[in-house]
Length: 98
Image (cartoon, rainbow, N blue to C red; front, side):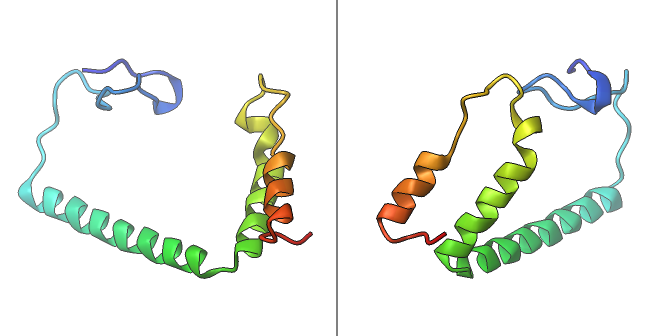
């Protein structure tokens, strides 16, 4: 059993269990969850294929935009995390144009 923390998070490498006793699960519920997992896998594979089909410059632009949008929340203790060197290297190799 894992320890449930606030917001539903459990300690790492522990199964998420928030009930004192296990809840019974029917075979139809298991089959439903398996189908749901298959749909999610297919959806993620499709999204990944669409992402990989984009030109590298567009992928880098999106990566930078995502980084800028979420860098404050990502790691408040790491003030020196600057990906500019990564983009400079990509630019120097002709893989990225600003």
